[in-house]
Length: 200
Image 1 (cartoon, one colour):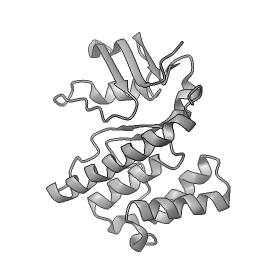
Image 2 (cartoon, helix red, strand yellow):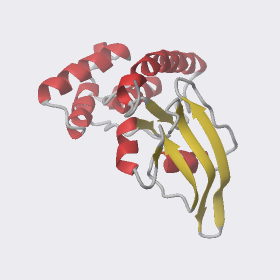
Image 3 (spheres, helix red, strand yellow):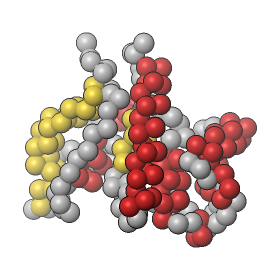
């Protein structure tokens, strides 16, 4: 029986691009309800590892599971269980915060009513309500990162991958971002029992 207290488990993950072995046999185990950091210099394979765990890249060797589901054989299930905030914002700078969150919500299958409700909740949670109708081109770096994180939480996944979430932020904004992440961990851990198949 799979231990669903384990959010991520990887054994011997390998990924090569031509002659460059970007990831060379990564092993890791991440318990649900924890913050797990992967550290290393540029080019160490951190983003490539996250991409494999998030089903964006297929491993050349090794195995990885998210809440017991194989990232290759059960990729569709895994995608329903994760949120991903990449190094670069996925939001559209020509649109407002509200418009961005509404589009993501609708793409994820929410009804118009539910999309409006979820958008309002996330704008309030990430302290963006006052700037909700402002074009993102006028947002600070910290506000854009908060909106990007909010977009990854629309479906309320029990697991979030954050790829360098505070890159380019000043020390004060970086601290605020980590405070937000800690709050999310506490809330998501409480919700995970209902969100993960086979738990409860």
